[in-house]
Length: 608
Image 1: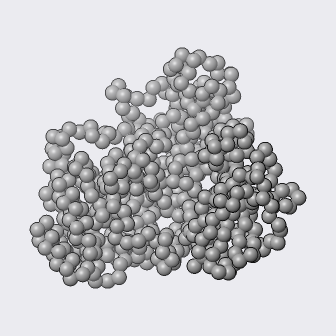
Image 2: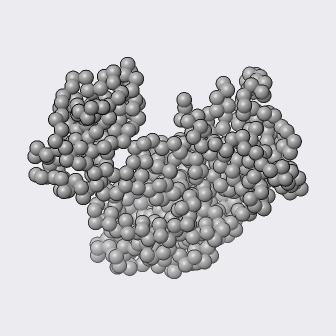
Image 3: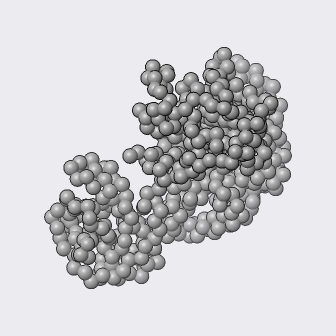
């Protein structure tokens, strides 16, 4: 059974439930459901679910999730975000099946008020290409295949003569170079680019040069805030500011991203502020990108505007939108190849809860209306905090993924996750952030479906494995004899210290690998920690290991041979004797006896 079918069995307990007749009648009186029957079919529970949703509020537009039916099997779900007007403009994600209030104009589905739109996070619409491929199938052959019924309107093809959906925006690259020049010659907003830089004149020079080459407008203002460079580098910045024509302010204070950017904004003259890291470079092919960000930032409903960022020298994503995961704000698809993902998420202009401050545009009016960056967040979460406050004002944050910049990430400071002192500061900022925004954190990211994973950076279905939900475990001293068995195959892949992970665990040692006994799936994997003759036994969580299954294809249970255990660092500090701890997996039989495999699967590390 596929993961998606497992998910449907686990979550679709609402199927077959009916609504009171007056609820259904009221829905039919007020709304019509529009869908395309040429290559799609509706769910038998669709009208009931739409009626129940309509009864909960005064909505003008209601839409649902969808999937595909192929060979009588449901697959390829599309779990949609809550109302996202920019995403609708660029992708038409609402099309499929939706309900609109009768008598209302609905040529464009991107102009509604937020509180007038309802998203039903249930799969009520099923795509099928049977007609397109001539694979005619009777509607009664599958319980999820139905044609139109009372209260539901077949819209036919929902595209214009040109093939563009009614409210789709112009795709990137559609304008000719001459048209773009004509357009930007009439650009009437003043842009202030605010950059923080300390002791990196070479990096700043690359950033500024790329800005100068990319802009059409001739009055873009560049402001550099330096929080304490050396005398040599300060002189280099001053010389560069004279040659490149930007404003330079020396503010020798401890690094506080929020405070320094607020200082920069207070000295800016623009209608639009673009906050940019000095490790950003605008590629030659992205001419006019800053003007495009500024134009979007000046739109009435727009809050902050970000852009897709790629790592240098490779086509890998560093940022294409920030979402709230279980562990906190995270960059979806970070580290993935720059390709097409999840219905165009990474290549279209979309609404996201937040965008990174590495390149963030916001109108002066909106920035000042929320009093700028929160200076209680000096290093982390300040950009996300700004975006959430803009969202709470009723504005939409946008990530322009149709364009990209290059980000030489973290070139100016170490990664907090691998430094204990820095991580202490990071943890304090996270506590402040989560307390301040507890309401939206508890409710969930409106632009990321609750049906998608809240652990990983991909778009996997929210069907977490055992190891993802497991926390930390405390091993116990054991005096049991450990027997070697030649039929036990095992490996310890990792024995590492971790400050944190994507699942909310902090300050721990992680031990992972795989173990199984040939022809026997009844034993329980455990981990032994050994130091100076003292042994501790720790519980594990099961992990799927396709790589192990490929090596041992005849062992049916080898796919589930993976294990992981996380030991609190404080506990590991207490059990060490000589500073070294050896870890290896064992199997516990029904009789409580322990069996190990080859000695080569042991890993030893210093516990400092």
